[in-house]
Length: 297
Image (cartoon, rainbow, N blue to C red):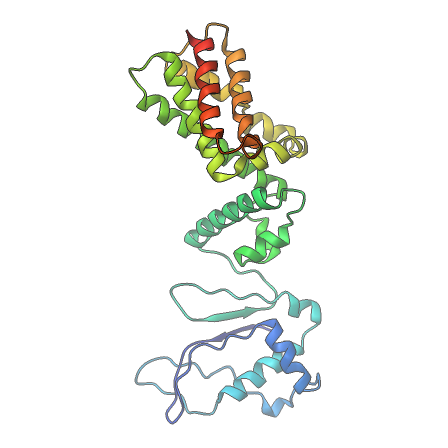
């Protein structure tokens, strides 16, 4: 659109108060058919000077709702279609102002940026579990969050980086779960402490459904990531398991590598709980406690 157009909540004498006019591209396209694709004569256009500026300062009631809509339609359709599709609006908690600005994406506040980042991560995690990485598009993610596709790249360089953020988030959560379980089991024999940590991780994966993403997409995701990103940010399961063993002074009899591989095998049972059936919790406990006794006693 040409210039900046701002509609604020205002009222005029003799007219019904109304809040900000919110017109989407779809609404404007419906209106277009009624106006035969031609802008109204210049004489019909109302100047951009009808803002209400205070309780004691009422503008003359020369702008009705219909005239305002007419002005918007005129301005909107006088621009190329490509620019129309780029129209954006930005709503904040501090104002009811709707801002249309010639296709430019308006900056987010720090608070909005943080909230949008969390929303994108949450939606990406949901899609990771329900659709998988390959079937999820950037369009799906941005539509669910309510931002323009171009704004996605202010948060993540690519779709793969968004899913990598999900993978890192899952790893951090699982590390925290195991860390908490080991801390709570302080005073128990090493085998039981380790068993409690493994069971806590398996239960969390079972509850969240994240195992579907880890098993189906994690390997492909890591293949698509730049080596520099993996070298700096990614640490495999064995690294995390070694860190916890060292932190709590747990020494597997046959080495950390075998312990890490055993834990990965136990965690994979989460993917097969449906096949195991309703006795899966008991089966998992028997497997975990048996394996940990073999590793630590």
